[in-house]
Structures are given as C-alpha cells and as structure tokens.
Amino acid sequence: MYKKFFLIFAVLILSLVALSQVYYIDITKESTEFYSMKFSDKIFVDVEQIVSFFKLQQFPSKNIIYLSNPKNNDILELDLIKGTARVNFNINRSFSSAVLSKDKKLYIWIDAVNDFLGLKSFHINNDIFVYNSIPRIIKIEYSFDKIIFTLSHLINNKMIKIEKDGFLIYPAVNEFPVPQDMDFKVVSDNVVKYTIKNFESYDISISKRSIILSLNKSKINNNSKEDNITNNVAINTNTETVTSTTISKTDESNTDQSSPLEKKLNEIKNKTTVSNASSGNIKTYSIDTELLNVENKMIEINGRIVPVHIARINPKEMEIKVIFNNLGSPKDAEDFLNEKKPILAINAGYFDVSTLEPIGKIITDGKIQHISSYLRPCFIIDSHNIPTIKDVVMEYKIYVKNVLFWIKAINTAWKGDVKLYTSEYKGKIKESDEDYIFLLIENGYVVHIGKERPIKNQKLLLIDRKYLKYIKDVSEGDEVVFNIDINQQIAIKEMVEGGPLIVSDDLMPEALKEEKLSYSSSIIGRKTPRTIVAIDNDNMVLFIVVDGYMESNPGINYDEAQILIKKIGNIKQAMMLDGGSSSLFYYNGKILNYRSENWRNKIPAFLGVFKKK
Image (tube, rainbow, N blue to C red; front, side, top):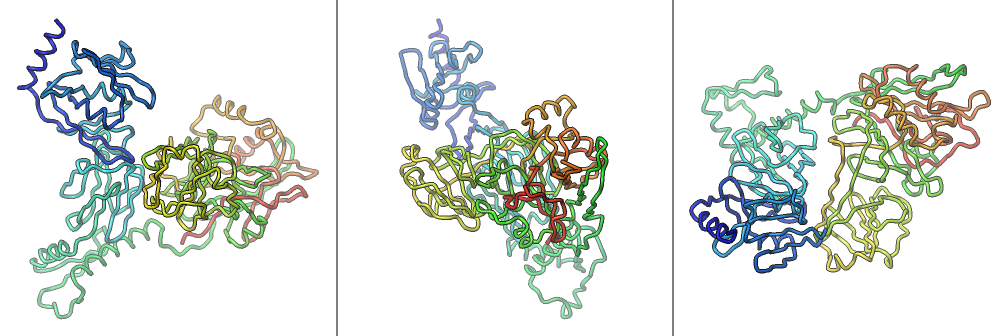
C-alpha cells in the first residue's frame, strides 16, 4: 500500500512542480545553488547533491537510505516506501511526505535537511538561503569616493537587491556603526537596507565578502550635465540647506574651471568634513572640567578617612584607550607613561605576576589582543565612544583550508593548541617549529610559512603539529578567514576585562551577590588599594583609585567599595580592575596615589586618556 502511494505521489508531482532556487551561504565556502523543486508549499532538494556537498556517508538498502554525518554521527533515515525522513530514529524529529522522486533523482524536503545538519533557512520570493550562521555586516569603510561593506560570509549576488536610493542585503544583520552620511533601517527580520546619498553616481561590485561602491566619473558627468540644463546651478555646502551660490550661464567665464568630477568629489569631501566636525572628529580642544575633571578627595568610609583620586572623563570628547606597556616585556610603569604621554592613566585588568602578561579579554582599536574563557565583566568603549560594562563571551574562530580552529591564546606564552601573536607583542616567541606550524598572515592571506615576528597589521598563527594532517597542503597565498562570535551586539573599539562588578543597572541585587561570591576571599574581603572604573548616569567615565598600604589607611574591601560608589553618587555601573600594589593613578606626568615599598613598577596594560586627533 505504501509503495503504491509513493509511486502515485511521485507521478502527481510531474505536473505540479514549480521552480525554486536554494542557495547555501557560508563563511569559507563559495555560495552553492542546490538543485531544487517546489511541490505544494514545500521545497525539495537533490539528495545526491546534499550528500556530495556536505560530505555525508550514504548507506542504501532496498527501501531505506541512511545518511550519516561524520562530524557528529547523526543519522538521517529516508524511507522510500512511506516517503518519510527521520533524524536519529527520533519520532519527534520525523517528517512526513518528505521524500519524492523525479527523473530518476531522489529529493528531500529542505526542512528535514536543516534539522539533520543544524542549518537555518531564509525565504524571500522564490529564493531560499540556507546557512549555519546568519551573515553579518562587520565593517563599513567610508571615504568620499568609495564605500566598502564587509560581511562575515562569502556573498551570493542574489543576496543584494539594488534600489534607486540604495540597496538591500538579505539574509543579514548589521553589526557595525553606520556613517552619518548614510541611512540604515531594518526592513524586516534579517533584511537590512542602506540608503546612500548620490547613490546613482556609484558603481556597485561584489568581491568575496565585500560590497564595493565606487564613484563613476561618467555617471557624475552625466548627472552634472543634466543639472546644467536648468538656468542656475545651486551648490550646497552642507547636508542642511545653507546659503547657496548660484551660477548664471552668462557668467561661465568667471566660474570655477574644475571638472564636473572634481566638483562632485569636492562637494562630497566638504560634506564629510562638515559632518565629521559636527560629530567631534575635527575640533580644537581645551582640557576643561567639561572634558576631564580630576579631584583628590578625603572620603569617610566606616569611620575612616580614605584618600581617593577621581577623574571624570567625557568619552565623546576625549579618547579612552587600552595601552600596552611593551607587551610581553614591560618597562617601568612611570617611564613608559612618560614616553606615551597620556593626559591621564590608571592600571587596567589583572595580570600574571610571574610572566607580566595580561589575564582576560582585551581589544584595542577594534582588534583582539588577548582572550580568555572566563565570563567576567568588561569595560567597553564602542565605535560611537559610548561606554558600558558588560559580561562578554567571545569565541575567536579561524578557517585554514576550510578547516575550523578555535584560537585559545593570543599574545601570551601560555600553552595552547592554536595561538596567535600580533605585532603589539614585544616579548620572545618561545614556541618551536618542532611543536607548531607557523603561518604569517597579512590581509587574510598566508604570506610566509615559518616562524617570523609579525609587523604592522600582520598576525602569526601557531597550530599544533598534531593537526598538520588536516592542513598538510597549506601554502603561501592561501586564504585564512577570521570570525569572531561575541554575545553582545556592540561594535567594540576598546575593551578590558576586570571584575567584580560593584554596581550595575543591569542586574538585580541577588545577581550582584552571586557576582561577589564568584571571586576569591582576598579580592572581596581584604582591605587594599583599589582601582575602579565606573560610568555615571550622564555616560561620563570615572577612573577611581583608592589609596592604601598606609598605617592610617590599609585601603578598602568590596563592601566598602560599594559604600564609596554610593557616596560619589550618580553612578549606574562600576567594576574593579586590578588593585593592591598595582593600583596607579597617573595625571599630567605624575603618579598621584601613594606608593608603598610593595608597589609594582612593571604593569602590562593601562587605560589611558588622550586628546582626540
């Protein structure tokens, strides 16, 4: 009976099949179109192509075909009599009317494939995109003659829809701050649109993960000629309408002799300059109390008078950066800061006192410089110069020859199967060729195989030789893809990990108690000098250093730090950084806090404040 039903079902589809296009998009693999068909409201894909593309194992029998995924040993059972598909023999993962035949080819319902392989689908019109993870816009580079959008995945042309004033990308989510001269909106789930001024003057091209918009000379000339048909030409010098200059045709001899292209480029450049100036990128600074205010106070805590150094910084007007002290081989802290010349600096996160290497996650200028597996709070400055304190979970993945690795250590001598060094690391790279494969990477490509110190934007990737069998044919010129998964939807510019949290507007009091219990008794209970970073309700950043190691004042513990924050007032988030003998408050060329004989003079990382360039 079942066999008869399946045969009738297969015959019926010959007249009912409609065309539908299914595309697989991935981080490392070129986009692939699967042979597919639409029957009723279901989309079916070619079984043989799925087996070949995903490298599945196939075990056919007379009436049942078993597909096995070698990555996790999952089984997909295709019943040719009943027309059903079932994952891991689980009745709750069973799909009816999921298998059909046409032109001697076997097809399977895409929902069953997605369940089996852990994939997701996005449907739009007759196109279906299948993927492991949603493509993300991870960078937007903007200049007056070119705009480049970089995605996390290799792009399929079908993902881009051109409109008169801009373009849509789907499926995709935006994770990068959008320039001011561009409008952005989420059209619907996983559909984003960028509206771009003078969009008709750009050529658009796609290269791997990049969408490139380039100003076209001929299009600019054509647009300029169309504008000249009118009696007057108005030239606006700002995005908002200001006094315009009108040029009469009869006065052409007295006008600017620049070409239409030069005029157009100058106009856009002027707009960008005005826009940047209004956003604070072009400014003459004077260090006043609205930008940076430093106070030295005596505050009463539990009957004791405690010296406290407090700086309140406007992150929109001042540059707050993580700065490394000769990472891997630090200098004397005071000598280093006098060379670096920040206006203000405090010591940053925790570090290993034996190796003098940081402990915890660190990002500088958008680049990951250190990583950890801990779930600890991080002080963050995003690309809009907005501060926050959040728990950050981060996975740093890399694909070499389409083989996925997880990077477990960055800029550290600590052991790890897969490690990375950047040019910021100044210590000795001690790992040997006997233990690791060394790949020097620049702009996403292997430029050298062997141990060589990275410079500028290069990275040195170390892979344990036990994995050589998976990438034995790696060579110079091979592409290497970096992918970062972060649990926070924030475009992070600067970040340093610390802890514990002292105050948080994101957490209930019970959660803060759990936070306190997750740290050692010496961090929580001991009275010692403390370094604290905080954010007030006006989004100002506070650097706070509490003196200690004095006969009259040993310092404060965690509970007293909470009292201190309440006394300072108006603070919504605060967390501790490294304290004790590492606590340091540097301002205008001097270290202001008390230094005992136990003071550490070699500190690997600081939070520094600079004038904006």
